[in-house]
Structures are given as structure tokens and as C-alpha cells.
Amino acid sequence: MDREGRGIEGRQGCGEMTVLDTTLDTRDPAYLEGRGTTMQRLAELESALDEARAGGGEKYVTRHHARGKLLPRERIEMLLDQDSPFLELCPVAARGSEFPVGASVVTGIGVIEGVECVVMANDPTVDEGSVNPYTAEKIRRATTIASANRLPMVNLVESAGDTSSGGLFPPDRVPSICVVFGAATGDAAYLPALCDYTIRVRGHAKVLTIHPQPINGHTSVDVRATPVVPAGPDGPADQLAEDERDGLRLARQCVRRLNWRKLGRPASTRRPRPPRHDVEGLLTLAAADPAVFEPREVLARILDDSDFDEFKPGMATALVAGWGELHGYPIAVIAVPCRSYTAVEAQKVVHFLHLANTTSTPVLFLLHAGAPAADEPDTRHDAPMAHAIARSTVPHLVLTVGEANGERSDEPRFRFSWPSAETSRADDGVIDPRDTRTVLGLCLSAVHSAAVEGAGHVGVFRS
Image 1: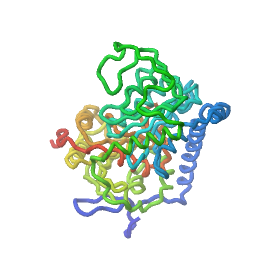
Image 2: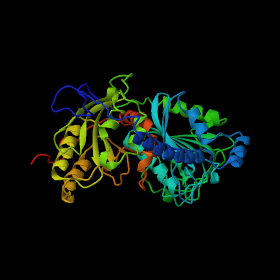
Image 3: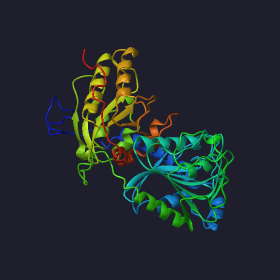
Image 4: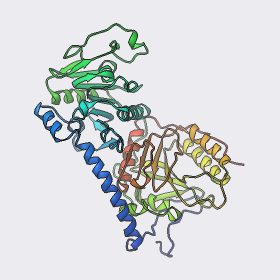
């Protein structure tokens, strides 16, 4: 509350930044009830995460270690810079399906020799690392993220593969590194030949191809038309490692020699001011009734110093849009209810996206159910907004909160959900609401590996 007893308010005109206040009462029974609901959902999510981390179970993990081999997350930990974060993507893929939780592969973003990279690691304790439809989709998503955000990709391969997975190939336009730790068959066998740098562990790496071997390096040549090149137990390889740890050391060496530099702007500060309000309140907001959901309460708990410069606060008030910073990166935020829009709401969205592109500012879409519109919206007004989103070239991040269905951003760079918003969509992960600021900060850092450039004019926004 402010000094005059008002709750959260946006600014009423152009000027200085507005510090968001909060009206959440942590003593309210509804607060405790909402928190309890979210905590229960998080416990269910943690159980699924534990299942994914357990791999194929104690028997197969013990056997794998007895062979002197590392588990996928152990390989990733040794590959990354010490004490650096790892943003795991789709960690509970395949949950609720006939396939193992986690889909026998670990993917995510981490820092190697100071360079943000996408990492993919097969889990050989789960059906020998075989590829199922969820595995293929998870790897394809990781590859897309690497290409779109200009992130080098490191593949830690040990997989029985599957020739029906549709082709799992390195990303375009960015360096790719492959370390082969054991048997690689099916589509997985083609990765070593198609990656820019290939490392094989002596005595363990076995590449067994069913189709003709593709030629080394990126190519548009039909690989099935090339001559068969048999692959022996060790390779051909750019480098041979004496053991797994040596293979990871050589992979780090490859990344170090890429001379990779970010093309986007750096964060404004290395020590951004944290939000002024406790993130624990996000647990309650995740279970809030859509009719009373207040997006500014979320922004007050994720933006630097809770500063938010609201855009057109007196127009189409069901849509909250504005500017702020998150971990030192400029961010344009638009909180949109998942329903059809009125003409005024669509106009506000289009104008805001135009400005975000003019200033080359990434956009965070905060999707929520929200209260229904006063008048029945006309779906015809969705078209100009959809057109503006499609033409927008700045990075889009999507966070779905509350019980919201639907997708309002085409091809977002990243898309995450709170536990209360799980749907059938293929999100990059369901996250603890309290981790929202950290996850979005890692995403913003990743998108600035590429140049952030706006399209300028994205649509008609004035009548």
C-alpha cells in the first residue's frame, strides 16, 4: 500500500518509473489456502522430477557406474563451469505417457568456458538411451533454441537411437560439438559426422549406422546417396579421449577455442536491485481466482526494484502492458487474458508491440485466464493482434500463469508455465513460481547471445 492507502496502480502519464506496491495480505486465510494448493502441485512436480533424475532405476544406474561411466547429469556437471547454473528444459517430458519420465535425455542451457551453450545428454540407463517420440521432440526443441538464440550446442551421446525419430541433427548457423561415450546407433549415429567437432572415448565409443554414413560437416547432400563408410569401435574422430572425464575436458577446450562473443547488448548492471516484495507471494498468485487475478502483483515480485512504467494505463485496463528491467535487461511486459479481444484491447497490443520492436526490446507475454470482458469480444479483432505478433522480430518469452489455455505468441524463444497452468502444450518446463525471476533472467541472457533487432512497424495501431 502507498502512503494514501491505495493498492497497486499504474502511472497516469509519461514520466518517471513507478514502483509497484502490493496489496497481498499474508495473514488472509485465502492467502494460506492458495499457497497450500500451489505447494501440493509443486510436490507432485518434484515427485516427477525425482523419477526423471532416477534414470532407469537403481539396478541400471549401479551397473552403469560399475563400468566406470558417468550419468548424464554428472557429465553435464563436469562439462559446465563450476558453480554456474543449468536451466534444464522439459525435465518431465513424457509424464503421463507410456514412456519413461524425462524421455531418456537431458537438455538445457549452461555456461561452458564463459559461453552459454545448449547441452544435450542421452541417459543410457533408460532403455539404453533409446529415442522415443518425446525424446525426438525434446531434442528438436533444444536444437531450435540453439539456432534461434545463437547458442553453440554440445551433444553428449550414448544412445541406441531409433530410425523412426525423424532425424536428430545439429542446429543451423551455430557451432556443434559431439562427444560419443558409448554405443550410438540409429539416428544418433549420424550426429558425430554432422557436428563440427567430434570427440570419442577410446574403447567405448561405437558408432553403428544402418543407412549410408553421411559426410563430415554440415551438408545439403542427400546422405543416403553417399557411399557406405564403416565406423569402427573408435572412430574416425577429430580427437580421441582416454576416458569420459578427458572427453569432457576436450569438449570444454573446443568451446574455449570458438572465440564466441555475444552480439546482443549486455545487462545494464551486474548487481541489479531485487524486487521489493517477497517472492513467496507468487505461490498464492499461482492459485488465484481468475476474476481477481492482478498481474501487477506478479510484476512487483519479478522486475528489478519492482519498477514498472505502465503503458496506456487508462485504456483497455484488462490488459496490463509496460516497461521494466529484469536482471539488468530491458523487458517489455504484456499481461493478456486468454480470450478473444475487444477492438480497443487489440489496438493497445498492436501499438505496444510496435514500440517494443522500434526499441528492440524483448517481450514477455504473461498469459492468464483473467476476468471475462464486459462485452462479448468479437474474434475478428484478434486478427490484427495475431498479425502484429507474427511480424514482431524481437525475442518473445511466454509465461503462462493461473489456469489459462491457448497460445498468444507465435514461435516464442522460451515458454514456461506455473504448476497451475499445465496444459497439453509443449512447454520448455513447469517451474516453481518462486523461480520465475531466475528462469526469465537466464532466458534473457541467452537471447542476447544473438543480436536483438526489432522489425519496426508491425501493424496498424491507430484508427
